[in-house]
Length: 228
Ligand SMILES: *Cc1c(COP(=O)(O)O)cnc(C)c1O
Image 1 (cartoon, rainbow, N blue to C red):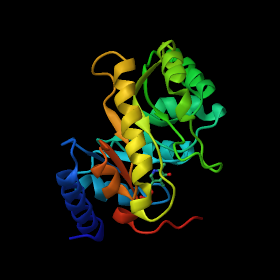
Image 2 (image 1 turned 90 degrees about the vertical axis):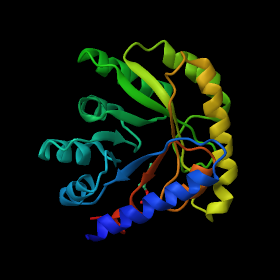
Image 3 (image 1 turned 45 degrees about the horizontal axis):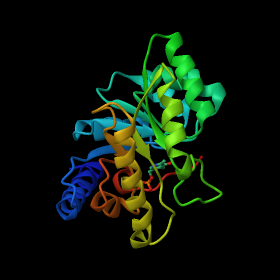
């Protein structure tokens, strides 16, 4: 068994155990975060049943996207600059980092140009850290209304990151995110909001306990990243 395979097995059982402790009984999708890891690592993860992969940078996603025909859904989850939106829309199945109204409008414009309706998540900066991108929680209603008026996008849910702290300290952030996500479901047509993306290597069990339907995990599957 490869290291990636045994890591994946361990991550999956930890997700299952956390799901058992969650009051929501939700299904959880695992996004394997492949950024800074080679294409071969992605192939191995797919061989072991991974269906969703996440990248932070458009160039890296595009490069891997062109390298083959892996049967995966591509998630873009890093802050997206406006001049990269066209390329992002060409490759991504779900853009998780919808972190400003201007960016959402640009995504909609570029998607419409190619006859696509781009699935996006609204990224909220729930902890209010100055170093983080994201929409302000108090703008939830206004942003949802604005997003619904953009024809080229379909909002599917909410993404957030907790502060990089002891996992237990992240719980209030995830709990608030779940509350905001429940509210979002009332603001969009029935069934449209289905993704609550939260939880990374450090804190995914707490996120699942608090109702995450999608976790984004890199290090626990692929090991530490080498930033070149
Ligand atoms: C890098 C990254 C992840 C994965 O982080 P790990 O700690 O390696 O699991 C998840 N989400 C976002 C937005 C990231 O930038």
